[in-house]
Length: 192
Image (cartoon, rainbow, N blue to C red; front, side):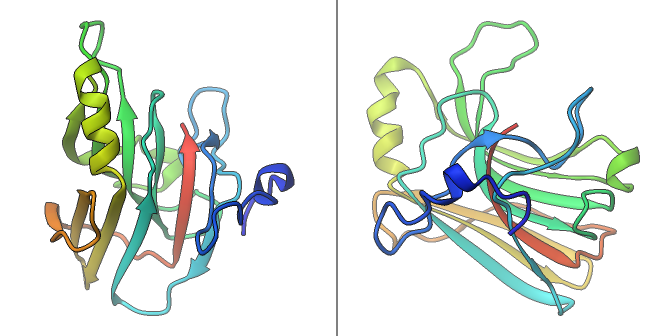
């Protein structure tokens, strides 16, 4: 684990058979005066060039801007190399336009080292527009959510499923070749 916040980490077993992570302030990209950093990031070394990773989320319904949970790939453990992030996220920034917030699946990456590169969005799939009448439907369909990334050489596929039951099929939101050699994988929950 990286950047421990013991108060919240000590609550990780609140739901039996689950790991509970909380959306604490932080991000893997530095923004303005805020340094890059994710509290209670679970991180492991990757030792293969081809792999597949899946995470399963239970009852995660983000409700505030950039509240999210997901998978992070990085070339180093200090957030200075190239990175890829796939997450379930809440977005209510529309450049001044008035719209209801959205729950999205988002994939972003950096084309250069993290300290020299702004993130580039490579997938943005709206799951739910959070109009008042849609909140119950969104909560029901986010009962069981999964994120999946497949890597084969430089080829990546980004997939998700969101449904009230676990047996729904994955849907691809993006696939592309990326010039990154991830050496670490992380599981995170943030409010970026």
